[in-house]
Amino acid sequence: MIGGFYRGLTRLGAPGVAMLLRWRAAQGKEDGARIGERWGHASWPRPEGKLIWVHAASVGEAMSVLPLVERLVARAKVMVTTGTVTSATLMSERLPKGAFHQFAPVDVPRAVARFLDHWRPDLGVWVESELWPNLIEGAAARGVPMALVQGRMSARSLKGWQRAPGFARHLLSRFKVLLAQSEADAERFRVLGAASALRVGNLKFVAPPLPADELEIAKLGRALADRQVWCAASTHDPEERTIGRVHAALVRRFPEILTVIAPRHPNRGEDVAEALRADGLNVARRSRGEIPGAETGIYVADTLGELGLFYRLANFVFVGGSLIPHGGQNPLEPARLDRAVLHGPSMENFVDAVEALGRAGASLRVEDEAALGDAVARLFADPTEAARRGQAAGEVARAGAAALDAVEAAILPLLGGA
Image 1 (cartoon, one colour):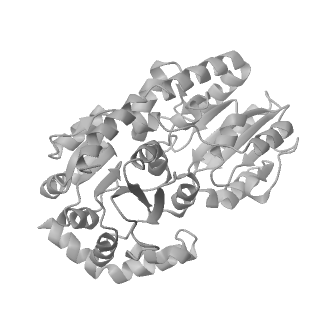
Image 2 (image 1 turned 135 degrees about the vertical axis):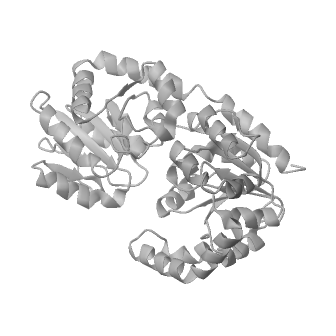
Image 3 (image 1 turned 90 degrees about the vertical axis):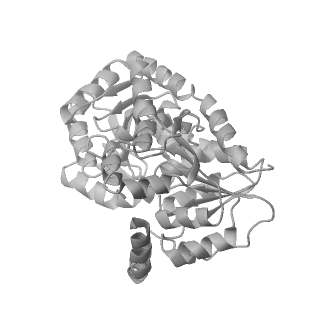
């Protein structure tokens, strides 16, 4: 009942979706040159032979599944679909030979049909929590076997799905394999009717370290040689101003401090910089090619794909999206580069990782602005503690390789004859 209602609603809503896409393209949130892909128009022919379709929402999900993609290209061609411009750019740079990127179609019946009829995937692999009903139902109707990997179901999402339990049960039944990130996620899927949901490990423990340009490391390293550097990564509004106030309080004690702020959405760089300047801070911006001088207090890292650079230059890292009720960003990315991790109380999106880092003494949880300032001061005052926590973080981040084997073993039988 609800499925038919949803299909009808999205069919009627197609003109509104078209207007939204045009607006997003004007805002730089869609790739205007590839907007046809969002309506299921392929950019090139389907490759011959078997095709595995991996669908991820955006940057974090796509990056976490790259090690799996590298395994799968040995079995078939791999198409990775995402929905954001940022993820498309990163995938074009980092997908292995034998894999390619397409934008995911909007969840409108005609776009979904056009997409599936062209690509005819032999296997669909969905990542985390990106569950679009028309796309799932369309693939199932065409006999595409599907697996959900890195499955994530927050307590809040569970409550939402429980408002339509029959619809949720039916949708989840379309996945022949359902692998959750954590046991808590697996149990929530079971509550919704996915009795076979399993927890086999988290692929985010397996991803390679974020890359960085060696020349840029050397160049910025020389400029920051006499500075104490920390990085606040993947921040959200209003966390940047909170971090700015922490910096202003700390600079009296640590006059050589440089605070790097890398907004989760780099296109916010100008707004972030202006807000910090309004608070009386001296700010430089990476996207404008500026190099921090002796007078620079805040360096806004508003470029794409350079977190690996700033993690390598920082003494330790604060993970954003955690001082606000957002659920946090990936703490394993700095951990993989042997950096101690600070985070706020909202890390629901990465429960397994946070628990593992905490048990190892690799991280510090801060409840608010004052606690963040205390933790930053503590690690600057004791570089030995920062290094010890960083080493422990690296060990945690590199300990989960068995998860990749388990995921591959679970999904490959669905490909058939591979």
